[in-house]
Amino acid sequence: TTEVFAGIASVKQILGVLSGKGGVGKSTTVAVIAFNLASRGFSVGVLDADLCGPSLSKMIGLKGNIHSCDQGWVPLSQPVGAGIISAVSLSYLVENQDQAVIWRGPKKTAMIKQFLQDVCWGELDFLLIDTPPGTTDEHMAVMECIPNCSVILTTSPQAVAAADVLRQVSFCKTTGANIVGIVETLSGFVCPNCSDCSLLFNQGGGKRLADHCKLEFLGSVPIDPNLAKHLDSGTLLENKDTCVSYLSYCEIVTKVLDILGVNCEPMQAEDGG
Image (cartoon, rainbow, N blue to C red; front, top):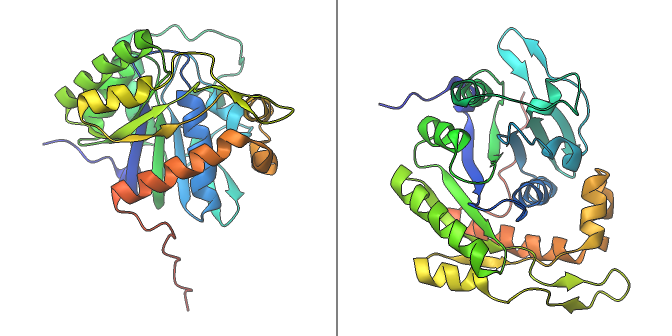
């Protein structure tokens, strides 16, 4: 039997974002989906499992250090629209953000388990998990701790990227993960002046991969300099309406909610007393 960690016992949906390829927008996808879900009124947790390259803290604009209470670690949180985002990342635990994390597998596995077991996530509608490229110790730790974890796979349009993601599909099937679908990132370039979209790479690699694997194609997202700028500065929330690609992610989130059978409008808690 797989142990159910107390920290995630009250989490309704756990959704990992994976790809066999690096640099195809996993962290961007996690950050934007988190903002979109929270803007719809959901309570969202974000776990940065990319231990050697944690970047989510910068993208979601949460700064500070994790502190502990009697129940364990308390994630950093901020209200977003009618919802809330809570986040845990190794970047909140290290003093020097520029210092390399040089850990072997057992230490990485222990850290992932600690993020799941010892963090007081509380009641969440969603816990989103960002992962490093490949099929490494971090992925194995997540899959061991969360049986039947739902995942979104990201790929860019090129065939070489799709080949790596195909191996990630094999990994997910072997570990029993539930693949929600595939997102194609870097799908064209949005001009920051006129908003026209120009194709930079081959088109349709994500859709072809989804068809080949008999998986749902969730949609494509173009390169958007405005989105990149506001994620770098942690100011996406205030500027999301200026980002063409944010609209693409909105459609993807709606499709994911439908596949997972989640009402697009979260259930509001009843007033106590």
